[in-house]
Length: 129
Image (cartoon, rainbow, N blue to C red):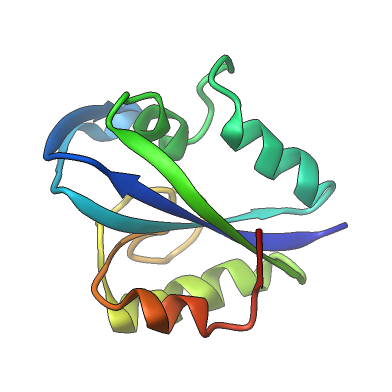
């Protein structure tokens, strides 16, 4: 199934993490939403993010390797690739974008957002897991 997903990531304490070519970024304690897409197998992509042992390919891989990060919830939606950037745009209106994170292949500000209102995220048209 093709689709997009949101990883709700909790960062347990303030951290400094090396995020691939972005270099060292500071993340403050709290909940973040990462939006991604899978155009071949959505379930396989989500399972990959949950694995600890993997080759680092995406910015989020570098963030998730930190012992102070944890995926708390996964939201999914059957859709085409364009929905990924539409969702990122909606998230940028209600959350704080981490500029340049996860969006090297599009024109979005970010695909990672520090969440201000978790209820606004869970009300989006996604299935929860």
